[in-house]
Amino acid sequence: MEAQVKELKAAFPSTLSSGRVLHTLAVKANPLSKTIQKARQLGLGAECASIAEVSQALRNGIHPQDVIYDSPAKTLGEIRHALGLGVLINLDNSSEIQKARDALETLKKEGKSPENPRIGIRINPQMEPGTIAVTSTSTKTSKFGIATEDMDSVIELYKAHPFLNALHVHTGSQGCPMELSARGIARAVSIARKVNNGAKKQIEHLDIGGGVPADYGSDGKTGGGELFRFEDYRKAIDQFAPGIWDEGFSIYTEMGRSLTSKMGWTASRVEAVKESGGRRIAICHVGADLFVRTAYQPQNWPHRISVFSSEGNPKEAPFLHQDIAGPLCFSGDLIATKRSLPRIDEGDIIVVHDTGAYTYSMFSRYNSRLAPSVYGYYGLEGHEDISFELVKAAETVEQVVKFWD
Image (cartoon, rainbow, N blue to C red; front, side):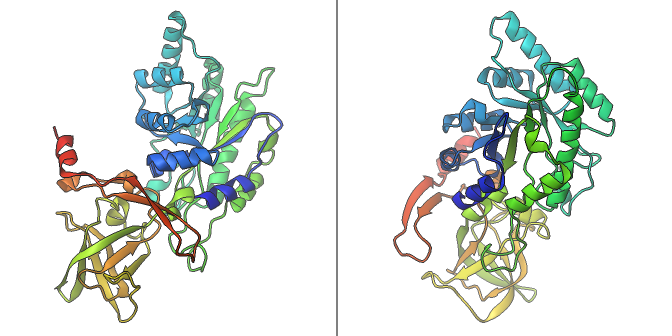
């Protein structure tokens, strides 16, 4: 994560003539307290997809000025609460714009008007989808944001609501070419320029979302995967939205898997191995509960998998085509199908790589499985002097049962 944040910051301007550049961690990718605390130490803010994520960011030391509140379904109470906190709020639809207006009027009557509130609209630039439809968030019929097919109507929203001083766009992430995201940003910049084409600059804050995929095909060092660099993303933005850094905006980014996917891996003991229909199937303790996307869309979300003996030694030949199944009462509970791997035996350890994003945060309660423990470790690669720290203890049966009360 440290290396990725360093690369991100090196690719973008550190300061602007007017305004600032703030990179934020998409909390939904990895909401663990230790991750957010590390993000704060590295100078990141937090992008939050719910009011609970806002609270999680604040309780872990992120300053309200460095928090972004996104969600397509905000209540009036949540918007009012966010205004009181002083976070940047991206409104998703016309209903939320009215709620924000009502909340501001009520707060003013109560003598509690927020100081310099930051409130914007999320637009949908209505681009073509990437290779993964469910992570393409700015298609013609996307549920996110206000459609820009009639750009003049978006501009009129700003004129009719002078409290709006921010604009947000997020085209997608995994499966979306960086050029596609850059073109979405260009659409947002075009709208901001037209809104600001007057005596008073109304839009001061420009949230350009995420847009950098993660490489799940390799370790990022030895090749074999598709390499994504923040530097290339910056070049794409400069190509399609030239001058963006000189417009006087404060600019925000929202990065998730591109920062955290490679900092995590998941290990499970193989509890049993069976043969069925000529297929060798290894049963382990992780499956669709932790790898929801992999189970339902394996073609889009494959993870690299390594096999180790019970003593922790890497296993090699012979290679066989095998399935790896999880513990759930669900036939689709598979994290690998017909995968060529060293022969897996009972008691072996499988390691699933690149699990630092959108795994633990998507944990399923189905079958009342216990969420596993999480450990952090520190040390130089190739050195034996490594220290471990418990980040989150495994759930107990009592805690899970209590969830259903």
